[in-house]
Length: 150
Image: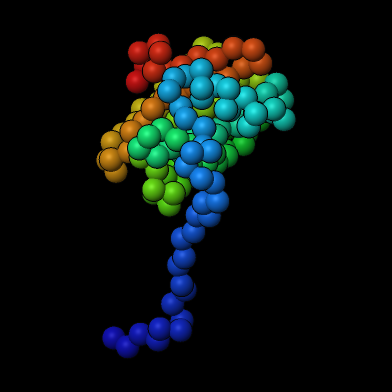
């Protein structure tokens, strides 16, 4: 089989890191995640559901945040492969997932629990620590790690 190299698309992967390690936020607990993510959810907290992922290095310093899903009032579809692709792109050692509940309730739904299990299995498969899943509402949050759900 003869292959013409110029007809094969080039694939590039990039991550621009312009923050010194000493200037990065450090995640030690669920409260740290909630404080960092509160800013990410400012524009949608009570309007629609969004899912954000916090990517961390081995010292739990934040490499970045990525919005992986935007939905409606009742939910947002999360593609776990997008989370894992991004984690690999940024050489993350750990991730924390967070999403908001516009209803104001922080009680995990069946869908939240299923999504968490899928993400946890994916992280295990590629050697990335799944630090936590935090559900946010206007003035409170629920940590899956704190509640023993992961």
